[in-house]
Image 1 (tube, rainbow, N blue to C red):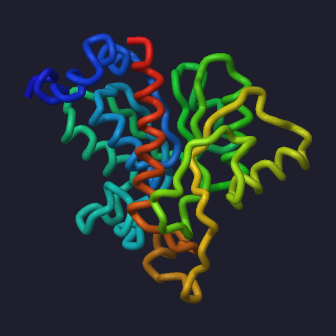
Image 2: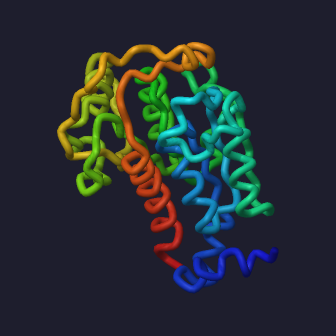
Length: 248
């Protein structure tokens, strides 16, 4: 199938120059779980053709309720490989680099962040998220977009995109700021975060560890739903698309 057929509706809205901007852009996405998987698909379906996805996890049964590439047939597969296969089934001409790896302070240099136009942070680990934020905002080139907490929310009308320092009522954002404050180190550039203004709910059950999750070293502690995580991911994708095509 020709590119013109796949992206006919995108080009009608964005124009030829907009599609060229999407085709030229380089994006790296850290974390392809409940938020990141939807972000990746939103980008590829719009016409982005150069995407690097990074995640060290494998698909487990509890991913099925909210993660895009998680199906009965992909359980046990590396998330990035399952996601890559899905994205290439949409656009076989896309250049998808799948890295089954974990971003940490120790591995950060391996990802060459300065080579990208956009860095999208969908990392759960507080330590690693903070390092990625500090490292990316210290560089002149990449634009950073970050996801805060999507768990324990149910109201889709409360999801927002806000500059990090102005995010209120989000426990993850508060923990990130507290870590920066304790270390007396702050991001060197402003960046936007997707978050929810809805007060966090509480888990209604005890949050028992499910045996299948232990097999894949993934412990789910907070309830979360697809319609919220998907909106988070699509808002991140939408911001990238909007910025790339703004001047076209």
